[in-house]
Length: 262
Image (cartoon, rainbow, N blue to C red; front, side):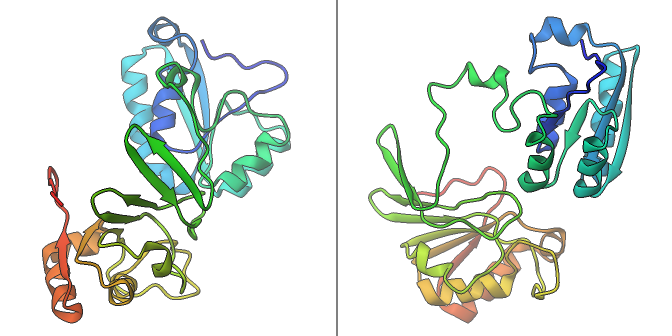
């Protein structure tokens, strides 16, 4: 059961999935605890999570009669300062680890903001990825060559199997990025259709960034994924075909259920 004490303890969570776990009490005592949740639940969440969290809150209230989920959506920094100043909240969902740290550093958060207790029992080991690290999972070895330019601490992966594969996850473009992913095959997250200007707070890649990476690395194959709505509306395959013509590299647009053999 979620209860507010005289000294509030706030559960800090970074994603919508985390909110779902929080609202179902899966970080406490499992299904039995979830069934006991009653009363008011106050959630402070980043404005970018408004649609997703509102939907989750409505679903939670429907599944748990007697509960009321109240949201306060605003900028993460503003919400963190409200909590530090004493504003009562049961859940804090920040858009960035740095802002979440403002609350956790004040020892105002309960629980683990990265790996929840309920999930930990299913893991054999938990490893924190670091820039330049090398890791082994079974017979697969991979590196995290460089920290990406993103509000959330993010790394891509570089695999050496019977070939080399680079996975470039979310990041703003920076000149050295391609040098860390000189692989025979690339998988690239690309969000934006139009170029991202320096003044824009969009820490992702656009199609022109992807073209620059492909031209520098010259992989055998480049697979594009993680599309934004403008690319989806145009047709990702059209963007891939255009990049193939411009670069001379085999560029493929990923699709649901796709399997790729190398």
